[in-house]
Amino acid sequence: MEQSLIIYNTLTRRKERFVPLHAPHVGMYVCGPTVYGDAHLGHARPAITFDLLFRYLTHLGYKVRYVRNITDVGHLEHDADDGEDKIAKKARLEQVEPMEVVQYYTIRYHHAMEALNVLPPSIEPHASGHIIEQIELVKKILENGYAYESQGSVYFDVEKYNKDHKYGILSGRNITDMLNTSRALDGQEEKHNPIDFALWKRAQPEHIMRWPSPWSDGFPGWHCECTAMGKKYLGEHFDIHGGGMDLIFPHHECEIAQAVASQGDEMVRYWMHNNMITINGQKMGKSLGNFITLQQFFTGDHPLLERSYSAMTIRFFILQAHYRSTVDFSNDALLAAEKGLSRLMEAYNHLRKIRPANQSTADVHGLREKCYDAMNDDLNSPIVISHLFDAARIINSVKDGKETLTQEDIYELQNVFQLFLFDILGMKDEASAEGDSYEAFSKAVDLLLSIRQQAKANKDWATSDKIRNELTAMGFEIKDTKDGAEWRLI
Ligand code: ZN
Image (cartoon, rainbow, N blue to C red):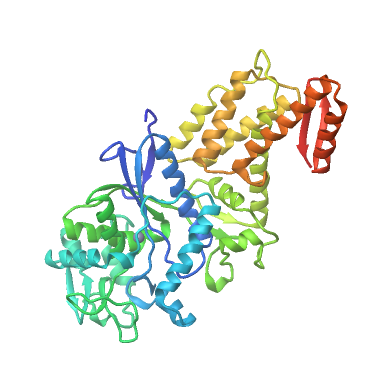
């Protein structure tokens, strides 16, 4: 842990040195998906961003408890308090139980995350499994006088809260502007004020997902779940809360208000938000027809896609931008990412074929430190990648006979690639079919070729020819060199 990580805190709007409350333990909460449809690019970005953070913190030696929830109740079509529940609507349209929708899309979400090499969180709680905790939270806020009951629903009293604390500290919005721009929506006559948000909603007779509470048969407001589950699994104060920038307001703003209103102070030390993804310069949206699911990227089955793109191409593409910058997806950009990634993989795979020299003409020292510096500077993955490209250029120069490397330097490059490209950036070598098994596979080919070398030395031409011919038939190109043989798969 001698590395010192600096992260940008959305709450204070500045970069801060990361100091956990209870080192070496780190508590980290990230808002997970609402599981009523297939995961799309909008889901991939926060998942990959916080996977990068999770991997890096773990590498630094922290014991990270990473909580990423599944939202399966209370996320209404228009934020927290208006419209039909997204899961219930899907269930009604498909004539299935809401929990069937949840199960189906949760499994598909896990598959997509696995393909992207996103590590599973330590705990993945469902909102519907924590209704009691959410009711307790609402009770506490009512007790402290920051909420009111109205016709069986409970709303957060934003104006009252704002008198004692400040509402809007995360988003930078102020309450007067919000009052001027918010308009009364249908069903909001229950609220004292249009900016108040629901903590508990009385269920309409046709609403399927409902639980008993002191106020009505109903369901919790969307913002309650993360406050209740964050507290349950990470305590009243924890280190990091993350999510997409689109969640800053109202979701995370409301979470801060709920925490302060219920326990008197804030729960979260560092708020981190990834920026959004656009497609061909446009915001993603169902009405724009550019809502491309991850599965469609993997198969190429979408009118906007010229071909399919692998999960690692998507991951690499996302990591080539800093998480606080916007990312614009296009076919050209994805093709460039695919080429870049294969250039790195080829360079890495070539490393083990390099014959060590007595002296290095290229300087590989400092590479590891530069990669750490970039990671420590608010997870600057594009800079890490640019340093790896510099290393790839050195490897290619050695390949072309323009530079030489000692055994020690070859090992150092191998270790830096292993650490940063694979362990921290979380890339896998897909080109070699099974990625992880590639190493074993190439060692097996090397072994066959060394047996052939031995056979040749023993003038056992039958064995030597058999190995060569059969490998060639399998699609290998074998080239004899003065010290043995080189191979590649064609
Ligand atoms: Zn959340």
